[in-house]
Amino acid sequence: MASFNIKTNRTFTAIRKYGWIFTLTVAFGGLWYPKLGLLVIPVILSLMIMSLFKGRYWCGNFCAHGSLFDFFMMPLSRNVKIPAFFKSKIVGAVFLIWFGFNLVRRIVKVTGLLGTMAFWDQLGFVFVASYLMVTIVGGFLSLLVAPRTWCNVCPMGLMQSISYRLGQWIGVTRKMDQKISIADTDKCHQCAKCARVCPMQLTPYLEFSGKNQFDNDLCIRCSTCVVNCPAAILSLGKEESTCKVKSD
Image 1 (tube, rainbow, N blue to C red):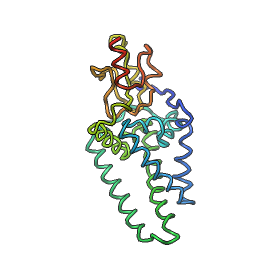
Image 2 (cartoon, one colour):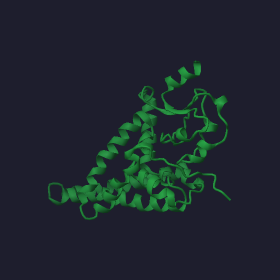
Image 3 (tube, rainbow, N blue to C red):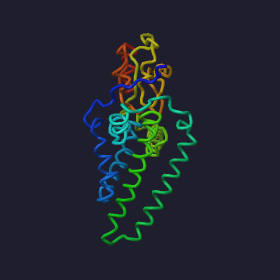
Image 4 (cartoon, one colour):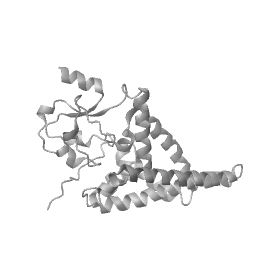
């Protein structure tokens, strides 16, 4: 029996197509040159700042692990339904607490070397180890289940969701946030193509708001559904542009 989920191109830019090189360079090259792990620090800072304004946009457009899963692993993946276990908020919170505790514990341990030649190598290796863990575990889940299975429990993903909620609360998301939008819900074929190609296995066609936007926080704004919509009525846009189209 054919799988509900469809394997389709998700790498529409050079960053999304070749970002996996960064992942493998840090995760494996860092075993010989630990300072490579220091490159992860600006990545974390960048994704946290971006998520304040645009939710999980980083996950769908810049994430190097996402590139690895979408470009390298998808052709080999079983691409079956992601179990509810990985979509549980409780499980995600446990992963975040566990990841955060271990990362902070290792960094604190390394600070004892501050001022020595070994400090930067040891600090870099902290991030190399984390990157390697995600590469191995996420890669295994990509093959066994679906390419973006790990993304449902990724600590960085959950941190972006929290940051996004903060951005909504203080009102900075409205002018910069872009969501999957539909020009007219009456023109939707209800074919579920958007759901079948969604990396996160979400169901946009069932969840558009009264403002014709897909408000699910797990959406990574990758535009895969936009490219694959048979009716060509989906786009990635701001709320005001969607409202303008609706009023017209």
